[in-house]
Length: 61
Image 1 (cartoon, rainbow, N blue to C red):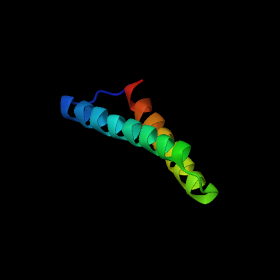
Image 2 (image 1 turned 180 degrees about the vertical axis):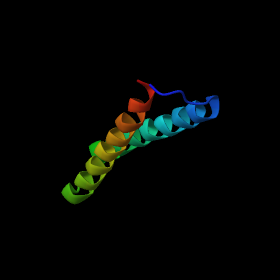
Image 3 (image 1 turned 30 degrees about the vertical axis):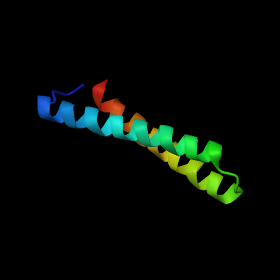
Image 4 (image 1 turned 120 degrees about the vertical axis):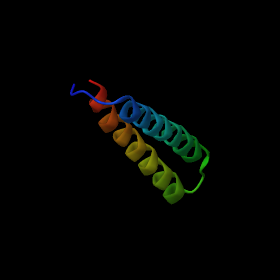
């Protein structure tokens, strides 16, 4: 891992937390959706949020 500043670390933590929250909410919305297209829309959003979170977490390795 390259050296990152404390501010950059705090920003990463904030972004990762936001994507985690978004993933959880989108997944719950998908679980509650009765319309197939709406369900698919939220599932896609949940997957995207998880992928973004995982990409950001690579900076912490």
